Each structure stands twice: as structure tokens, then as C-alpha cells.
Length: 166
Image 1 (cartoon, one colour):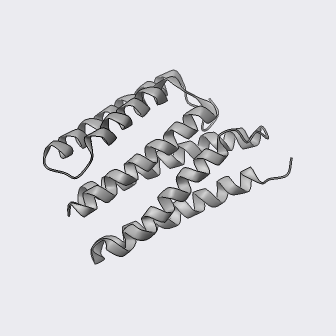
Image 2: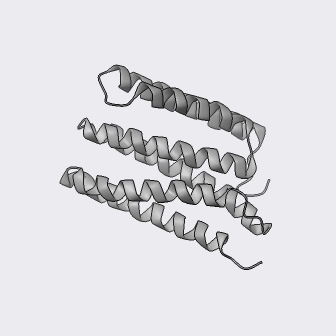
């Protein structure tokens, strides 16, 4: 199988991992977190949608899920739960990396489908991380800055593919 291509078994495994992540997020929400329950429902819907998609459609859904993951991270940091916030940032990074890997396949075929929406999600997360970096505890700033840098790199790559000559 080609790198970056996802089989049905891989998609099912990813769906199981995402379901476990969602369950952990719901547990955290029940424990008095400021994570909006509506976000959790919408995230679950995106998770189910992602299990049925592939290609650029999946990339767009994963980027959207990364936005939710960042929102969960921000809420966790706001609740002074740095460990949970770091987990959510890691999940956002995994979703964004997977989305970009799918877009790389599109770029290799000289297609630009979905790139604009993924870029918008990466931009929103990058701006959010800029603000988060200034508000988290000093001990957590390095991780937030590293995530900010990573998302900036991903966004630059997507923009490069988006504006590449045919």
C-alpha cells in the first residue's frame, strides 16, 4: 500500500481510536470542564462522517476535527488541566498531519480539492495557538509554541500546494 493511503481496516482502527478519545473527552466534560457538550456532539458527528470518507473530503473533515481538538485544548488549559490540554493539542496535531498527508496525495495528482478549507482550519488553529501561548502557564508555553510552529509549517505546505503552478 502506498504511504498515506488508508485502507478500510485503517479507517476502522482510526474510528476506534477517535471513539476512545471522544469518550475521554466526554468524561472530562462530565467532571466540570468548560468543554461545551454541543462541541462534543458535533465532534462525534464529524468522527462518524470521517469513518465513511476518503481523499480530500476526509482531509477537510479531519481539519475540522483538529479545530475542535484545539477548542478542547484551550478549554482544558483554561480549566488549569495542562495534561488534558496537551493531549488535545496532540490529537489536533495528529488530525492535521493526517489531513495534510491526504492533501499531499491530491497535490501529487495536481488536484487542489479541499486545500482551501484545510488551509482555513490550519490558519484558525494557528491564530488560536498564538493567543493560547500567551495565556498558558510558563511551563506549558514551550509545548504551545511548538504546536504553533508545527501548524504554521503545515499551513505553509498547504499554501505551497495550493498555489503551485500546474
